[in-house]
Image (cartoon, rainbow, N blue to C red; front, side, top):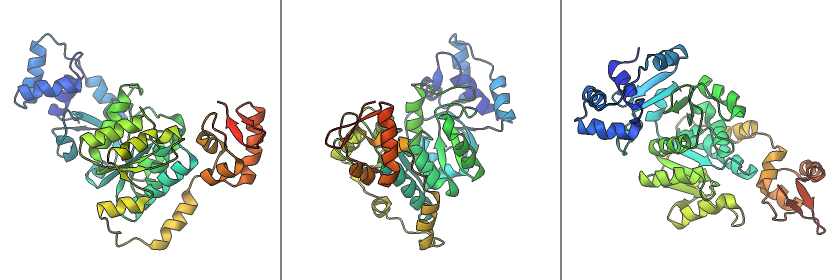
Length: 353
């Protein structure tokens, strides 16, 4: 049963013309009194909606609600301006009170980037008991969750909890919850992702995390907005560098120029945060588990690592992706027949689309 004050908060922020940001202004003006806030809204010609249907829908679906006036509300949110007044979640809410490290990056990530995100998430979770938090998006986010899913992973999403986005992460969504993880959102059920909800999600990730690991951030990317929010909240920003010819690293390199920490692997993060391995960690298990769980290579991974109109050889593709040449070669032929790539006279390949 949702407490009365939480229901009142929900009524206030669902009032047309109010929303979370204006709610905080009114709430503070009413001396942090939620009933007075609702009364002010009602007396100023705003129509306060009935939220019983929203509450009932969430309760039927076993979706929990966390309000800023409850004890489990994270202290990190209380340190920032205009935090989410109310959150919806499934899973282990206590994970937001553990040391959180964000691993975020490009959706069209390279194979090397995904492999690094997976191994860093696994090492930070298993060996150092950090809780990995990310956005459950394609690419880097997905790999980070897969690397940490066995140790409790936190996913912040940009839609209601009844909507899985992207659809291909449906199994990962279930696995996160089955293995003691947490899925968190500011949006109630039924609301799909939109252009405004992704920056909100990114801000939540940045606020909760102790530090942010950035892997492949293009200029004007969502990853870059997450990093900028982290800077706003005085969080540590760790950035993996890459090729100056790859647009996925333009934003990453700008962050490094602006003072972010350049890192190459989890060890750099560990040394900066002065983390010590957990006593129960067995050294041999990292390599064994990593080998067993690293996702198998597929053609779309190395294909998207190719830069359009930037020629690359088979040897260079093999080196950058980590996939043997005998697996890439027949796929190159197939993509050439489909008009996706073109083989030049010097034997190098151009991505056309």
